[in-house]
Image (cartoon, rainbow, N blue to C red; front, side):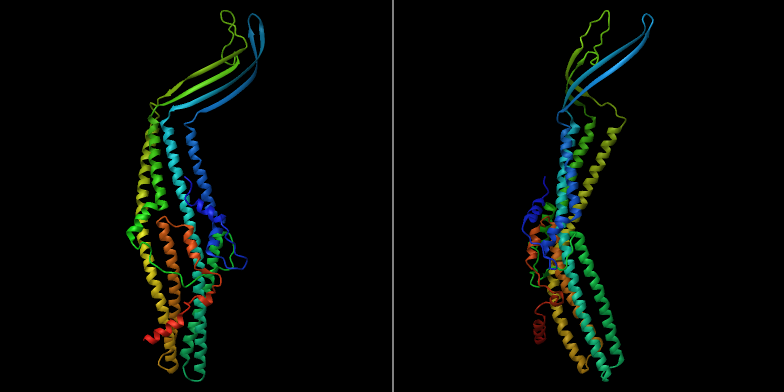
Length: 475
């Protein structure tokens, strides 16, 4: 069996995906293509699969004819001491060449060895497909981790600037006697904390780019950003039971475990076949001088052979194992335990797959609601900041109220962007659990990326001010 996703990978590499020029933002498909071409773990998985696939021809060879040939040419010198003639020395040159052929007629153990190798090869192909599929998710996780941290950093920068303005305003009000020193100190503390958060955010962005570089063995200066217009919809079908059924039928790891169980069953049959007799058909042809074939001249009273001789043997060889010291019985018991291990492993994976399908289905639906709620939270927080700032200026609110309102606003922004990226990744994880994740999913996401994205400008929803104004009018 050829791995399921190899054709998809080959097609992706063959398509004309233009590499991003230096210092230009790279898209999701570009990152994925580079991961396919350069990821060391994927290359190792392909090599491991090809190595395991060689078990099939090796096992099949045990059922096919075995043909061998050989030749020898020897020179001997013999010295012997006799009573009659004293010391005698003789020299003799002998030669022979032979060919042998054997064909297994009844080899039950080798037949089951072939079945075991075939099942193991199917398992290896599905495991490689799962590795290839996992790379799709890894590429998306690494890519959107960069975007997530860039948006969070932009929020931290905006928060730092807001607190810096608030700090300057507090100092001005203190200088003219409109506020006390406490307001200045509280504003300074908020600004200092925001500055520390911004520095931590810068590190997280660099760390995320490093993960992407490790995955692809390429350096990226920038990535295309995510549009705020990405549709956020429940999974289709929006039925947890349907996703569980799909996962149980198509999950690649679970399907690989089916073949692992079959391989364990065939291996047990191989071990039990150690008690069975074996039967081989054999044929051999030899030609050489008479001495090398065992037809020596005996002197008086026996035939005198000429130098050349040949011999042909055709027959059947039967071997019946009677007692092997308990080795075969021990190997059978070992096979039984290995089969039990495979059965329990499959059941554990089945339960985990069901749990993942249900949890991820709930997670995607929760993310849909979260994105909507977090967006509304930004609008409400934005309105609250404006109202609180006005109240502070007229003396009905304190500096603490203003700072808290601003903190809530930027926390809402971070939560909103995190919810968007969680929705994307949980959707992909649900597809992976159901066995349907493919490069097409990345292609669909790539349509909502654009190269002109500027985190410091675009981390907020584009219609925030208008929505906040409408929110204030409604109230």
